[in-house]
Amino acid sequence: MLDEDMTATGRGPLEEVLANEEEESLRAAFIRLSDDDREVLELRVVGELDARQAGHVLGKRPGAVRMAQSRALERLREFMEKDT
Image (cartoon, rainbow, N blue to C red):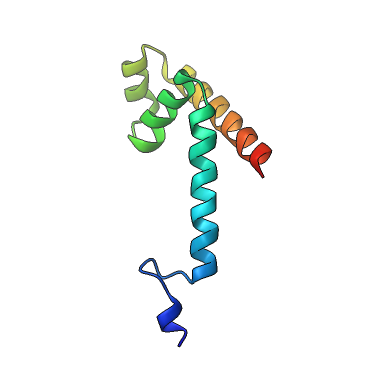
């Protein structure tokens, strides 16, 4: 049955494989980022800090944090595109 083909995430087997491949691609691209890029993304995305809070940790102004995040995300996108 279709219900039996669903995983615990509610996705079918093909969707699960594709999601796992995308996650692995993201991890590989993330590792290729510089330490500074990884740090700003970890604070802003993973840690869910706002630009002011992340700026306090990084010793940067909020605008500089937002710019660093934008540039880090662009580099992450570029690395992921190269892998596909």
